[in-house]
Length: 383
Image 1 (cartoon, rainbow, N blue to C red):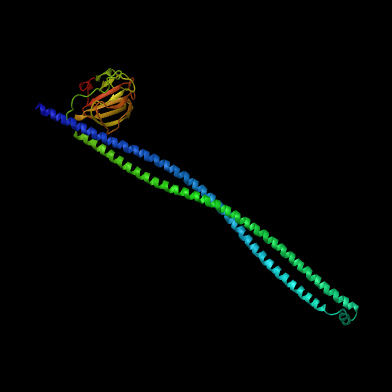
Image 2 (cartoon, helix red, strand yellow; image 1 turned 60 degrees about the vertical axis):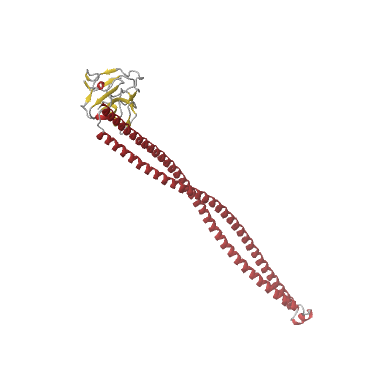
């Protein structure tokens, strides 16, 4: 019979150790998922900031490209105007050239006529004239016509030369405008290349954003799943594990901690030490300095952590056989709800939060999770 009891106790211990191991593994996976989520979120934030910076740079480049395009449009307008003026000058030159050729031909015809007249002897002209004065008058008129034609030709030649000079000036200006246009086009092309590179970078960053967002979504799903598994496991543990508690509870403080066995207030009735405290003390107070490590009194599951004005920071742990331990007036909590803990694990640091006379650990043992089921901790543990 004794061997059977020992076997049952060993099985219960192994089951409890297995449960704690499962909780620890799941909690570790959950912490890893949360760390991965934090890293992915930070990376996405950095990528988003970099993308925003580059998009602003692209906006500036687009403004620069638009400015160059305005310059090119203006230069094209000037070049078009120059080409029109040059075309008009060419027409003007052609017209003057035709006029010059006409006058030249007219003069040539007259010179030929004069040359033809030159074959007539002086005597023939003189005999044909009524008198000497007619002869002189005729010769003078011929000379006047010749001089007038030469003068007209000189004027046309001068006009033509002036128009050609104006045309050359226009062609020079057109060439300068074309060079300016090419320079602006080259600058614009370089800016477009820079813009294209930045747009390619933005495309890569957008892809990276999507990738990180997918990771974030997956981590969130994983975290939700693990938290649900922890909650279910904790609930199953709370509802199903009702085996007899194996052995006694351990002392919630290490023997190396100063004041670890200094009980400043025992379980039961007492004189109220401070306004707001109860006279029916349902726990023991152990006088240890702030920051002293507080240990779990046994294997179990953390079912609650938090803060209120009376307890200060607190932790509640469920053990086997619906036995609960409560730790109050803490300065720091080191575990979270649903976490599996083993005997002697550091779960918090002592302090003086809530209502109290000074730094100490309020250690409470309950037969259920509800107020009113408290029992004397010294019946379950000792140092």
